[in-house]
Image 1 (cartoon, rainbow, N blue to C red):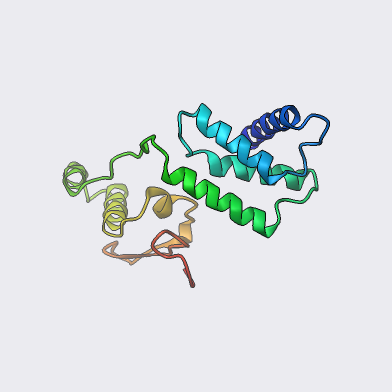
Image 2 (image 1 turned 60 degrees about the vertical axis):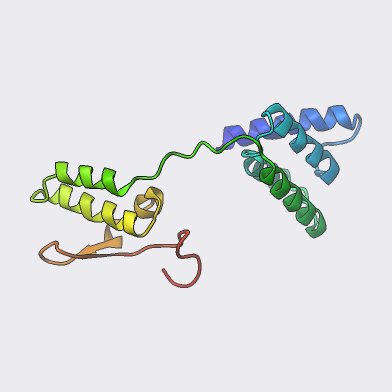
Length: 171
């Protein structure tokens, strides 16, 4: 989100200007960025869940301003610090419960497989359940030719791009 990235960059600029008066906030200095990130974690009651998006926004701002991002050693230190903050994050993740076999069975019994739309929905949802795929991996960015049904709609092939279960090689 471009607006969120701008807000984060503005917040960093205000912080960097306050901490280092008279110095330009960009290019980013690792110590200032880490202090800013630690402050963000503190303001979020120990939650480090937004740190990756903050860092991404800062990197984009560096590209927009045509200034250098961190060097390789600074990137390594930043990555290590973020990993540690996420490890000690006391705020539990707000993940939704995964769909269970019982839930999917109840959904299936309420659909009419003689209807093409319901039959396709059932096939895709059961495949996602069996393959432990996320909904976005199954349907997100999908194109019409990615799903090929046979002539009597009893089977299909689905082209899966890189997912959590398929990270390398051809799709």
